[in-house]
Image 1 (tube, rainbow, N blue to C red):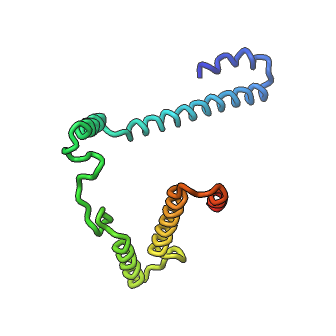
Image 2: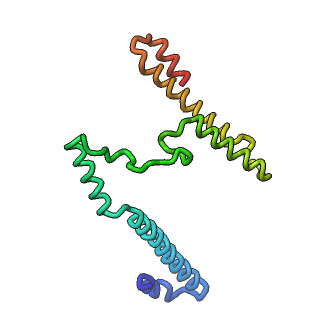
Image 3: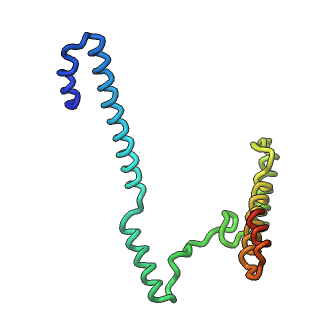
Amino acid sequence: WAVVNALTLLTKKMGPGSRHDTLDNHFSYHNFLKLIRFSKSFYYTNFINALPDLTLVAEWTQLVCDWKQDKSKPMPYLSAEEHDVECGGSDTTEADLKAKLKEDECKAKEHGELLLHEISATSCLGLGLLIEDSQYVFLLSFWNILDISIKTALFWQDNR
């Protein structure tokens, strides 16, 4: 509030209403700035607290350096934990995942639960994977053809 002390000279010759409005505006602006600074420091504190422990970072960096020097050591980029297939591990296929989702949907229907959306989770997953596959095939067909003509390249670019 010390910043507002200079207002006494400005408001000395004002009427009571004008003085009140001027002081109110300055106090509001001061509180606004305080609030803005608080949010910045609050987010900064949350960001700093969310960073991993520095010892973990040093450990992982050491693992990477060791692996780069000796490739026979375990690769640090791969997960060392085994995952259950039912929980979506690395051995899970698309068919396994679809079957699990279908089973969950059937159980939900048996218990009388209503679907939230018109499209089921299984159908949505299938469509998403189909779109992803078609984009991948499109990119492969576009970039792997080395002897394409300019006309064909423009066609692909227009239809992308």
